[in-house]
Image 1: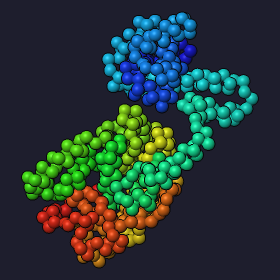
Image 2: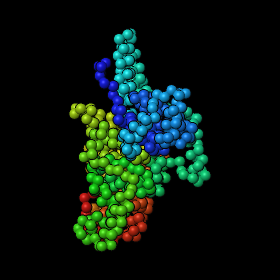
Image 3: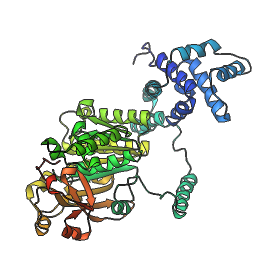
Image 4: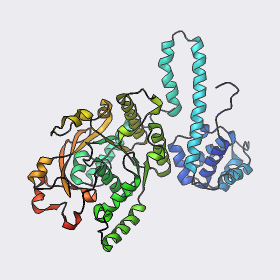
Length: 473
């Protein structure tokens, strides 16, 4: 950037951010503070002054509206009025609604980062002219740029972090909310895994083993409980995922619906399920939404966090994500290493779990072995194993199905969910029934003892439900 190049900022975005803070202070000001947007983040001096006043009023617990802010503006710096009251009216006139506050705040933050980057880069260029050792300069450069995003460093002391943990443990002992991650739909898996916690949790398996259905069960359960979920589906379409959810919710077989054998009562149940699912706090992005590249995916997740305060992200699946910034010559291992690092950083930045689906290695696929998969079978990069907080595999067994006298390709399948890495809990495999026509996982008794009664998850499998074999994920 040359010295006479325009300074990156948007007066309209800054005005929209300020107007939104005044129109909806209870929502927008905490959001701005969470994004570490302060008075100095604004380039226009008038906006900086107004934001400083707003933050001062928040600290005192004062009521915020156009009149109270105007009064504070009159008193600012002992009568020295840098901003006229009329400018507040201009800010509100330029902000007809606060609904787009997240967008305005993000633009303000992005322009601030660019200005700070230019400032640091210029200082580095000056230092490079006079410093004796170039390697010393290089060692210092990353820390300078890191301060742009996080100038204050960690805000909590070690004491306060531990105090928070101990308070959560005491609450768990008192019978309040357990000090674990997000609740899973199945008690046994929840107990073993301690739930979904910030960091990466990987669900891996061969094609058609049910890993996408497992993710779908978990995501829909979270959304049904009121937990906002963002889902990136690079394999199945949003239409497919919603149809499967409706079948699972209503207890109506998808093959029956597709072949036109569903009764009027079953179609009514599908309608009821649709109305419920439509209200879930869940947002699904497909390949066409520009999330197939790690850069676009990260941007979309950030926007969902700003707009909806999502508490979990799911991605199906990691090997489908591109990394265009690395160029076409990057091999799969290098690409997945970079993607894994980015997703882990995103998870820890927002303090939310990322549920990441993964394929197994081609070597495992070629061996036709009957052994269960293990950590070394993850496809693409050892970084997936290293960066993951938890790793579980989904697999089925033809021999077990034969012993139970079951048609392996239809109806229900004996399936294992095997936790092989868990930083905070146990490891081990659990038995499940994979109800293929309903896209549902039901817990099974140990060694599938419940198969003797012809029951999966307590629900008899009706003969007229077994009308067709669908293509499984």
